[in-house]
Length: 135
Length: 135
Image (tube, rainbow over all chains, first blue to last red; front, side, top):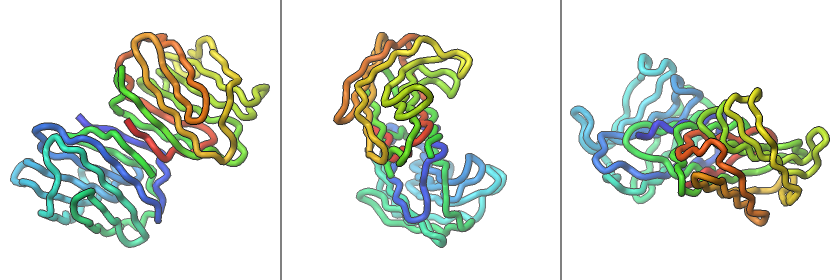
């Protein structure tokens, strides 16, 4: 039900971006995506509750060519979100890495593979509803 | 500056939507727009600091056909925003009207001309930068 997209958001290196919202009642997965467009994502942060073979697993990845360009996944089982719950995730990044702070959950890191310094596109996809976008 | 767009945002009748951000240093104007798409806007809330013949005037309008479909303007000179300042505007609406609450400023009303009950599109245009979108 998500699908929210924010374009031309001013998320530059060194800034913080907080997104918050509510997870659906019987979610398969939901992702927060940051990049230059739908097809050029520097950070795909996917919480998989029950999706294919994955249970309660965080999958992170990036792509420059949409669904045809996914690169190597980075996974974490430090999974703290649950169905129906309010979530809040604060993102920041430098030329090398993304820093992901999940409220009441882990702090994760993910490489800034494309060395981006300006990321105007934010989207949420899947089984959650965004109610907060804050710099 | 400006140009931010949020699509698929869940702004339904009876809900509150707060947007906040910073006005540029020498602004001509900036607008907050709520509707179904760029070309279908139920509320165009335009703060004109110094734009054409208008000085410190709020202009509200709506359109179903983008720039070719602007209808009758509704104006207010109860203008409380200033260059470089943080602004925050809370919107809500029912089947008849939009209710516009400007932080430290006036409460304005504008007719829900197209009787919309679900408005998934939000954009900010012009001389300001959005840093908060909250339901």
